Image 1 (cartoon, one colour):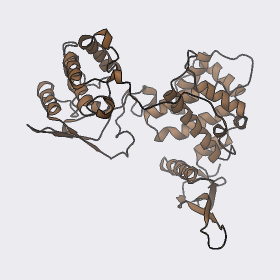
Image 2 (image 1 turned 90 degrees about the horizontal axis):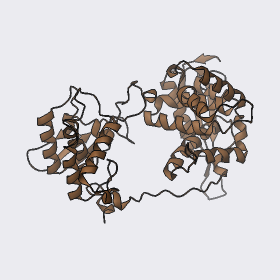
Image 3 (image 1 turned 90 degrees about the vertical axis):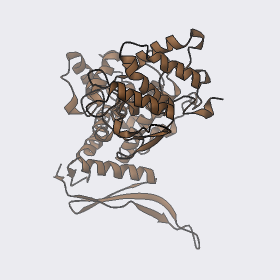
Length: 414
């Protein structure tokens, strides 16, 4: 590889063809153009979406400070993926490429999905480790960037050697039977039972994107999943009406939360109130700061959401802790979201600040030592509060804390 950092990008060019006299020209393809140390490079795609994705990958690589190869015109991470001859080698290179500009939860989902399909895309080679060993080798070692990998145990090292030797060629995925086998693996949970439609859809999207990347690198002629039809139950956005509480039941729950423990419940009551009255996600509530709150003495208030504190495994976060400091979900980094809040929530938040104060960083909701509240901690409190507020016959009601309530989704409450 002859490296250089002198790279410039151009706008995507639409290629058109004539349809006959008097008719407008039709776009038939899109070309990504860039220069590497004054050498012009290009790559043409059938759709604008593929071209934009490819250009985005090139720009991200340059932004990370990767060197570009003079001969191929590709950044180092793409060269590794293009030179991969097996699915396993390609998956490792793909993760290295996508990791820097993915959120912790996206990294976890990507690793999980690829760990499901990689053991399936192997030949019948003797000495196959058990499925648990293969999964651990992939999730904890192979499918994380090199700088984050722990020292491999003998079991993991053996599983990795087997995967390297047994992995099918990347081009084998053009055979429909291998693509179908991978999708079948995504449709099952670890215990062999059927995965929920939403789980399958999420994992399939990861696998589909990885194969799109292989198409961009011209390692596959087309995405093989587009030719495989796997019948799965359709997911729906319909909410289980049995799980939706009315305002009176919600207030019962919020009162019950204050009876959970000497300090934990009372400190969490306002956080749950934000989820109910304001429709905040748990990560948004965890990141809520005093300066984000306009809490007048009377009337409606306003929350200006800017930061979230999503929780994930330390292996996937940038901070090396269980929570990352990020912007709002599905929005650009500096976007904010304004949430009008009713007087009842204004009063709850004013009382919370007066009674419990705020953390050193201004956060409203924290542990007694100032740390972030884990998902398991507030789920435990919520479960206990439900046992106080509801009888077993009403057990489906709001089984998990979240945004689906009568206050935030009135159209779903009948």
